[in-house]
Image (cartoon, rainbow, N blue to C red; front, side, top):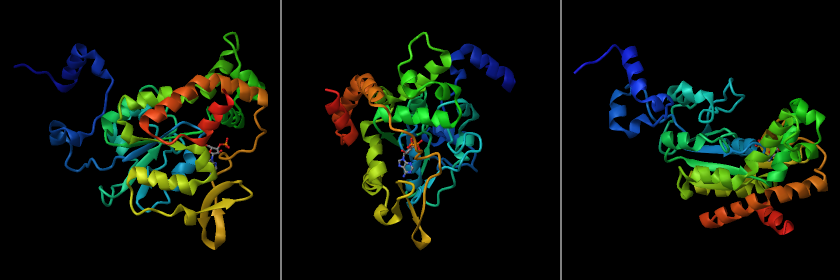
Length: 325
Ligand code: A3P
């Protein structure tokens, strides 16, 4: 039996198995062989029990903020690299490995009753994410927040305008969503970012190739905005977290913000920052009809998917499908 020094051995290994250059991290404690070589100083408990996967602009920050008010729920530490979100499974951070990921989570005081989570809103529609997430977190629960995809697209366009994206500043929303193949690449790119994530059923089906239906909850983002206490009750039941926290007492409607916010001492409220709940003109009826038509089949697919899963249909989905008949 022959062997080689470590680096040469690794080179030889990847010559034989080139497809394994791309890692797929698994929980070291789920396999005895891995556990045996996992440092005694490390644990496998610094991993989330659930993920808020997005998509962007549906109310994921509000859901994150409300969840962290719960005494048994702890979020990941904010990342200085990716502006708060960890964004591990979807991109280059994945190559940094699971120690890097685990460092975003505290040591739980009680691994069975503490619920740690992270919210990275672009997990929802990134091709590689569900497979990677399921490899490391096979028992995790997955929360997706959905609003009318037309409104999501418009909110994203407004977000890009606020970030001085030239395509969003120089083209109207209607021009962006109706752009054809001959349009400038930056407009087509913005169009893709507005419309792509809204093909909700396609993205959810990808998650369901790696997770059981019972692990996935679709949260109605419109209801989360108008009546968060009701939504948070459903979320807690789905997660199986105790005690049942009373959000009716914890939240208050802030008239000047126009949104629900955290109730703090002295009857005051603590709301999300300026970039959440922006003020902008309504979408034109012309663009709305265009998008209703654009998303009709996708929304039909979502309806069938939610019926198959036995999940409550969001009010916005019923309304949208009625209006697009
Ligand atoms: P707008 O700013 O376009 O209104 P995300 O956090 O996923 O990026 O979503 C942002 C959206 O969350 C906001 O989009 C806003 O409509 C919505 N939202 C829902 N509940 C909210 C709340 N309590 N406070 C602020 N924004 C909220």
